Length: 162
Image 1: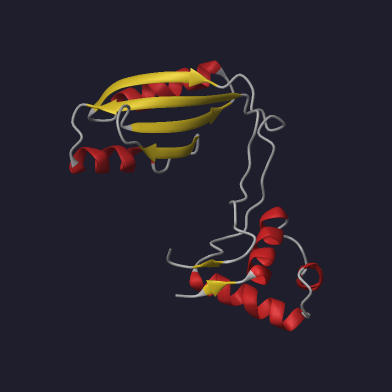
Image 2: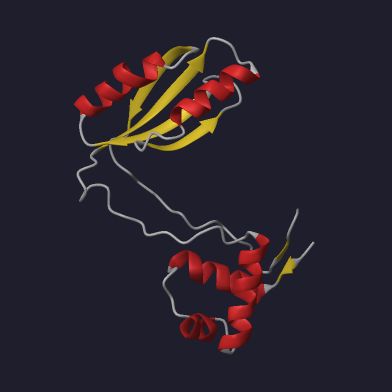
């Protein structure tokens, strides 16, 4: 197990806020010199703490206006049915998130599409045809009140594996 100290947490918080920060600016923000800062980042990447760096786009500016949460119940909650469903949605670009849920429904999807018509096509042409799907319910998001990608990290450090 490896312990993350306050400096590691500071590095991670800074990278979550701005993945494009230069190593020099990152080092300065956590009171390190550039080489030790770079080595800490590299070590956290090797541990798998930093999975990837992405660019967040504005869905509204890109014409993706319909944000919908879809509750999916399966006919049977057996392992094979779960695998079939998960494989079916794995490559669907409009599925932004998918969670296997405890209780009802079996899955919760967040789907982002340009129009109600494109949502209808997704539901009728794809989701209703996935083997084992028993019930589909949709809830439309009227407004996004909060959205964040940064994970809440403890300020005083943490031991990995806990």
